[in-house]
Length: 132
Length: 132
DNA sequence: CCTTGACCTAGAGTGAACTCTAGACCTTAG
DNA sequence: CTAAGGTCTAGAGTTCACTCTAGGTCAAGG
Image 1 (cartoon, rainbow over the protein chains, first blue to last red):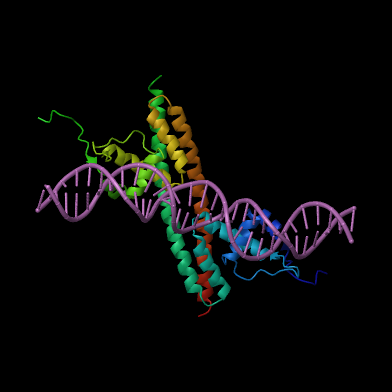
Image 2: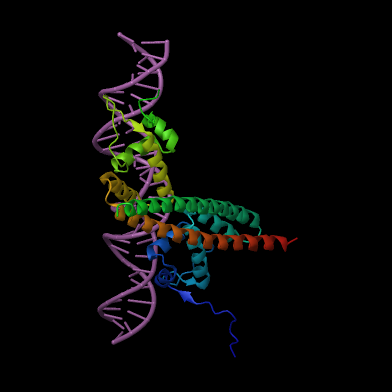
């Protein structure tokens, strides 16, 4: 029983993938044009895109990268490395480590900002309280 | 001695303020046009802007807000509240608390991203190591 | 078959936040 | 007084990351 395949890859239309990934259909097509997929997207005979679960996972990663302010150009560079296949791990590590450093800096910056904001809020609260 | 004033406010030209704040001269003029200063900037008889240390401190705050992704429109709203003077502390608190929540969300998001990136780096390191 | 809704491409348009240009004016050191 | 360099305004231009339009094509239900 269940002899066909161990991993059942589901396929998705671009509309389904949009619903799953939270990106718009327009954006997905634009992402493809920007080279943000690590392999060519197969098509139906009629020319419509067929995405696999691989694409779903890949977009989850891209969403992380974008949410941490990686420029699209850098995501494209990373996609290019993955597309090129094994052997360029050093480049991928370099790219990711550079981004990790940016991420550390962003987090530190935001924590400092939060302190400033909290001080402001405290200050206004006290100003209000002292006018009882 | 020193009878004139207890606080010696230094004045700055727009170029000096740009050097201090890290913003460009163009951006400072644009900020003023967007209503991002809590009071009118005085001018020389010839029409050139005169900034005080107050402006330096204000821009330090704006830089914090901008670095934590507050839209210019929100900074303008905050400036408007400060410009209006005492009495609207509740509004200022609401604005800042809303931003603090956004900040908390951003920080959480970035920490999650950092985990993903670190996992990726570890994965590539192991891939490289296993090819000794 | 036929309709209807999703999909296709190429390219134009949008919004945010700057960034720069042109041509005139101001300020200050010599 | 003059020259050099900073500043002025109004408005155009840029970059990024989408977002939408027009004019078609495709696929699935009835």
